[in-house]
Image (cartoon, rainbow, N blue to C red):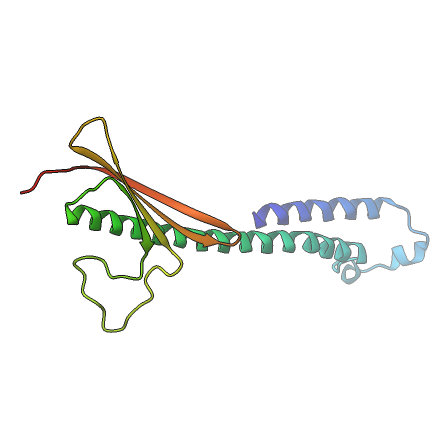
Length: 171
């Protein structure tokens, strides 16, 4: 993307130089006495155009960087929510009991089958879950849906995972 800006700037400067060279000079003595050293520098117009281009491009590029940081944070939150939903789904499957209805809570408790860490961590701070077990047309099959929600600014984001389980079978 920078190459496109550089190429545009180079073409613009070349065009401006040609226009300046075509216009007759008021002081012909200065034009005749010009040396190679005088022509190798930048004119005031070229410097002003470069500053104007930077004034336009830099805020746009910085805005894109901020947008990228926001997307990165959202991706991290979605990943954490998906892992927490899968954890709750596996916990539900491990219990082996699938009563029809809803249950809700937060992730303050350790999942089944895990050992508490030496240093307690704040697991899933701000994340809440809702488990819905619904019947299906097949009598022994239940649909288990886990929704994980968390606040994000003024909105509440939600991730949902679901699976089907066989209810009433014990091994």
